[in-house]
Image (cartoon, rainbow, N blue to C red; front, side):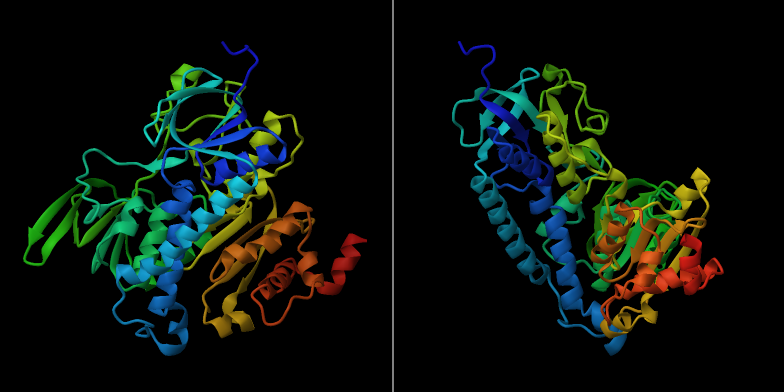
Length: 481
């Protein structure tokens, strides 16, 4: 019998998505014996194989092949390829997925992480039974610390007649046989908005349904309203304050289609329907009860600020703990959790995590929005720059983009950055850096940006902001002296 203090691993990570990868590699960097458990035959989790990487690569293929970026110059009818097929879109996607899988596997191997293909089930707070994917005999392993990074699965209502072609989820998009002429998207969360805008950019007649009164309620309202405007410009029909009662597969003179019944009594008929009503934590098969843990009704686990569950030896990171459920934040959670688990000091500022929404146009933000500041009773002012005012915006053909700075009206300290338009998810990091050192919008006024770039929006927005305060640039030095 093994000695009571014997551990097979110092760190056992369940799941090989972004959170699990970063946790495992951080553990290896601390010279710990690390294993990562993955029940699928490929590493990378949902992020690489079904979610983040495929959808963002698909988006880039849509933008390229549809000629969307060039329509400002060549007209709404301009297309790089006239008849775009799913095979055209997936050519790039499949290549990127394979590359990311290879990079991930190599990175884990290079850092000495044991990669084990198995399903994991807790038998105690420190022990896990591994059922190997190759069919070999199961084994129970003991680990000093365990990280749950199993991610999420699409929420599949048992009453919905999914056939993965006419009625499908976001996980099924890569396996569609053809592009539809019309599409209904049920659920206007991040995933629903991203896919609705992609299909609309391809000329698919799209309807987007959501029970909330506006899109993306956690996004600054002005930016969310701008996305709403752009979607309608691309002929997307928005059905807000509406909920789906049920869906039905039908066959009529136009072929096999889908009929969507709304609780309001309306009906919508389209070629295909994307059902995107949230995701559920992939915890149902982990045997959490044996470890003394319980998930909520959406399969999510509760943690403290260090991502530690109520069982001290077990941590949970990534999508399995809920919002914001982004690959970038999940990676940081994995790093912080492992550092805490082994007593290594690590700093992180969750309030300054940037969010990226890869709709068309894309959205990115960091810091506070107007609604949050109003609720908190903090006096603020805004400064705005529109891409159409910037030479780079004219050059790339994006004349509808917007960069918005929010800052304290008394000290001019930057509080938030909100962007919609081309390159938003890259551009936001300039503002993130200034936020991290408590900088003022004065920084942007005193900084010279390359010309022509979209980064100039920061300077234009800062000038707009001080003009709203009734100040002039030369007065900034006087008010800070």
